[in-house]
Amino acid sequence: MSSTDRIASIVEATQSLSWQERLRWIAAQHESVTFSTSLGLEDQLITHFIAENQLPISIFTLDTGRLFEQTYALLQQTERHYGIKIKTYHPDAQALEHYIAAHGVNGFYDSVENRKACCHIRKVEPMQRALQAKTVWISGLRRDHSSLRAEMPVAEWNDDGKVVKFYPLIDVPIDAIREQIAQHRIPYNPLHDQGFPSIGCAPCTRAVAAGEHPRSGRWWWEENSAQECGLHLVDGKLVRKMEPKHV
Image (cartoon, rainbow, N blue to C red):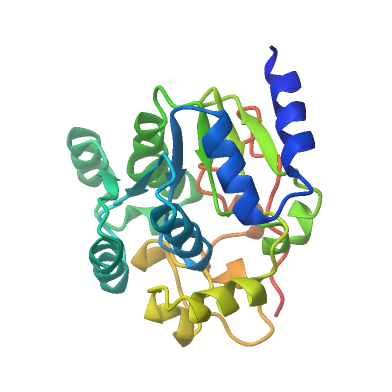
């Protein structure tokens, strides 16, 4: 079956299901399914469901080495709360040493090229290692993250990783996610209550003001068109860009 036909069959089977049913379906129909968590609200809800229902889905995260202390604390709290182990992938030490020697520890502020190189070392390459030998990559992306994601399907083909990318929460609004976080007493990052709707590396993330787009706090010093880290590709291309910031 071609990748196009495979995606079409997954979309047809899951697009009308609830997000819980989608996770159960993908776990039952595929082997070597993995979930990448950045420990955000969406990802904490998915982790909760996987752990509580003991679904055969591995969970991993990327430790860039520059995360907020609250994020590191939440990782440990989540593992203890659910009695699970979240596999952690780190940047290649030699590549990181070479980058810092050439650009400095905060060289990503100097240019878009430097920042993308930093993201590649700290996030993209570790992600590629994490996805090796996997058939399905589950992600917490949702349509209302951006108006430009409004037409995203529940599944896509990631040509860079040769893997199906599956979005169980694609059509779930943030208010519903927050309700379930509270209902099930799911641990979450306290920075979400301090104006951080999206949380990445500490030097690259700031709180956002009322009325600003939730993603405007990421790589806030750059032009809008440059604000992607390279993890979320379609057919190897950054085909969706974040919508302009609201000021």
